[in-house]
Every structure is written in C-alpha cells, then in structure tokens.
Image 1 (cartoon, rainbow, N blue to C red):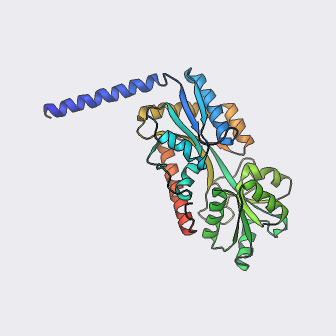
Image 2: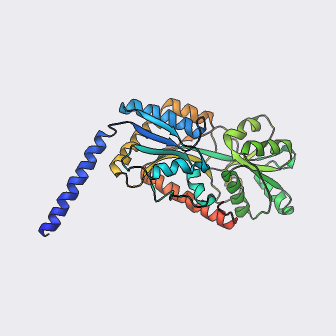
Image 3: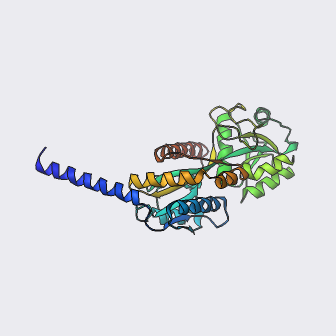
Length: 320
C-alpha cells in the first residue's frame, strides 16, 4: 500500500470515528419533526406522542412542525432539502409512497432523497359491504361480481381505498364500477345508505359501523387478522391469493444522514414506540405499533413502491 493510500485510509478512519463519536453525543440540540399534515390528524398525534418520549430520553426538545398542503409534499420537500445531520426529520404516512404514483411533478424522490429511520404504525384496511348487497363473504362478493360484470359499484375517497379495490379487482379478475368521493367518510356514508355497494377503507373509520351492523365487514387487507376484529379473515384467507395492502406511518431523515445517527434515531424512536401510551393510542385507532430496523424499513417501503407501481399501471391510474 503506497503512502497516498495509507493517508486516505487514515482519513477515512478518522472521519468514521468522528461520525461515531457525534452519534454517541446525538442529539446535542433540539430536533425538528416535520409533519406534512394538519394538527390533530393521526400522523400528527403519533408524532407528538413519540416526540415527547424522545425528548424525555434525550433531554432535548423535539419540536413538531405542521407543514400541511399538496398531499403532504410541501413538508416532505422541506425535509428532503434539510441538512443531513439528524436534526430535521419527517413523520408522515404511506402517502409518502403513494404520492410517487398519484401526484405529478413532485420536487423530490420519495426513496432516493430520504434515509428511512423507522416505521411507526400499520393500519389494515377493511373491505365492507352494505347489508343489502346480498353478500356475507369475499367469496360471495367475488361470485356476484363475476355474474354481473360492471354492475356492482365501489366507493373510494382516498388513494388507498382506490388502490385497495383495484388490487382486489386485478387479483380476482373482476369488473366493477368506481364511484369517486372526496373522503372515505363521505364514501362510507353512501355505502351505509346503500347508494354504493362496497368499499375498502380504514379499519378505524369502519369499525364502529361494523359493530353497529350498518355495514358488513368481509375481510381485512393485511397479512394478519386485526386484533380489534379477529373474526374477520384476511383477504388471502378469504380466497384472494397474493393480496396485501396496509396503511402505515414512518419517520425519515434526509438522504446522506450518517448511518450511525440513523441507527441512534431508530433506537430512540423504537423505545418511544414501545411505551404504553403509544400502544394504547394504536389500539384505539385499530392500528399496530410497527418497529423495524432502518434496513428492514427500507426493504418494506421498496416493496410497497413495487406494489403501487404494479397496481396503478395495470389500472391505468395517472398522476394528477
């Protein structure tokens, strides 16, 4: 090894040593946790619960900043442009991935421009039907849709609701009529009244209506049954092979944040996620606390990217 190579190696080792030392002392000042949604939303509430615990652990303030607008892209763009030092973070939902396929000309790349830190919660969606639709199971719904192509209607008031139904249609080979809504709340109201036959929506939103008998729960969309409605099968158990779709949340740092600092942040937020307060909130929201390493979170989000790409391309859903 020549003198230049030795010098380069020493410089690299010194730099790594400096990063490791900085990570051990991290954080040395307040952390900004940017939430690209309005105060009071579920994502905002999760950020505040976690931020308070991380502040207690580190003796540094975690300042929540709501930067709502443009489907979450305004706040996300701000974090993408921030210094990659771990002091500016993004707390958002799986819309972070969905937006790549639904919104035109996003000024950042949701994967390339961020370092995944940790997921926070995962929320299964649920397929529901109006009691008068004449179905009590996914199998019956599939058979009815095949007998009457283009006749059954489904409501969708969010990107997740639309893609959830499109995935079901594609895997089961169905033709159904899409009725768009501005929100899942409005969509669910019309399913309850019978104006629309079925929909896929957030379990937390549909849970009270399922319990009240105003809609029939047919299946949940995750790989496991929901703890709040364990009697409902998953879509796979109900006969739709290969089906999985979740709503979820997570925390990201700007790309280029040193791995040692990302690892430190992962540990802090994992401890915050394990608190009783966080688990109680998740249970009330029909969600589950979701903890992964940064590397596993990266693999998880890339798998979701592939899923959204396949479904939106097959359904010819264009960014708007």
